[in-house]
Image (cartoon, rainbow, N blue to C red; front, side, top):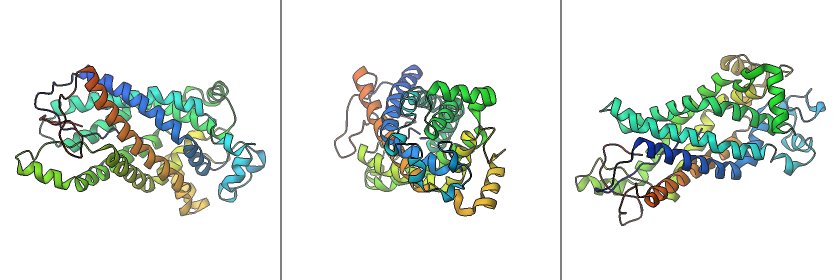
Length: 341
């Protein structure tokens, strides 16, 4: 899942954000950012799902074939309308992203504010990684059902009510949390990995500004990357992390979309990895990697850029954020604070 990795430099007279204000900003800015990103990238995500699953239920004739034997366009045509099929589950995906992204960023802001107080002296990077993982743990309660239902809708032309009813009839409430172990394994690795790549990219991109700050005795000051730089580095980081974790995403998606009548069922991440390797070959674990890297890369870049800009703009409008902006290309609020995003 995508983290809010905004790092800030605040003005010396900037008021401290309260926990309620930070959580409120996370809920509002994260939710809106998630909706916009999902609106733009939903077709690419549908392609990722279609390329990942072992079979689709859109055509009975496809069930007897291996996914490797079924070209992507053939699977799309089996849904009757290739373009329309890319937007299956669009409404639920977009409007459902508002609460899931909002809760994620709200939880992230809360942990980001409290962890440094509970564990002083630890690095800011470690606090951000820990905050992101704990936010994932909090959000999984609503994110997993959203993802399971959304992906099932992307595979078949059925409404939200019909898809939900089918899942509950097949497996009960537990069906909404299918593949939750694979889900946590994927995002538990993807998020820190993406974070590290992003952080290193920002350090390289702004090494000159960092050197100037160090010369002025402000070596610990935090830098907010520009919108364009956040998008470029975030997209790169998200893409690389997605390629590396592709096998886990394959198993997660298949476990979330499998039904009691599926031709292939996995009982765990390890079982899924072994089964795919044994019956489909090692390269099958990287099926759909292009769509996955494109989707995650653009999503990461857009989320980082949009969330940072919206958060800074809203804090300024509400009069709870930094009061002055620095001159120069970073266009970030400047100041002094022990920790920041």
